[in-house]
Image 1 (cartoon, one colour):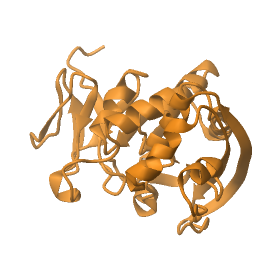
Image 2 (cartoon, rainbow, N blue to C red):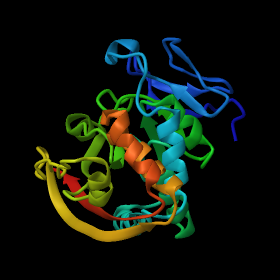
Image 3 (tube, rainbow, N blue to C red):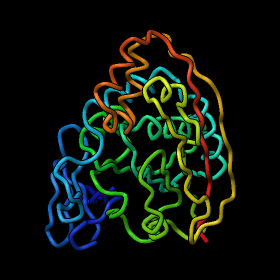
Length: 280
């Protein structure tokens, strides 16, 4: 093997669009744009002009809450459904991008599932939250991580075989750009009455989730599945975690938030849609 061989990143330079080469401490392109890799294991490829606020994405509280809640397996039925869909379309060497990976619970679990079934993908992921990627990098060192927006992906045109969008902002135009023709897009969304009993415990007038149009330009919807179940949350901490890991927390008054402190257990609905698209 050539000792001078360079390892190429899955990402491209967000400044000039050239390929990025991995060095021990950074990613660098042929035009010498250099991006430091954090000790925790991610590279920041987010350009300041592509975002409007200084604080990006999930904060430490949301990340910790999501880690604690998901690691207890409450969403395992959805994960099992994702496994089945991914396995139908994945293959060894497939380039799989998780766009909006959060703290990588889904990303890492899917990677380990595929490897366990003798399918080794080339998996990489982006999220706009540094705090999420600090946590995500600890789950699996084989997944390359970068801070980036799903609406400005530092990824080459038509280079991905599969793309995940699990409860994340949905940049369909960018997804179409980076997926190969015939590439697979797998999306998980909350359905109308997801966490309904949690909402009724907090709000005087709860509202159902509005669903986006399932049809997406440039894609064919080839699979559609739904999960509707009730989960039992046996302690107050789990109730607080599921609430603070969602956007509801930051849109709720302190008075309404206080209502959850008195709940020691709760049964609530979980409703997910899993959508699989194929790029035309």
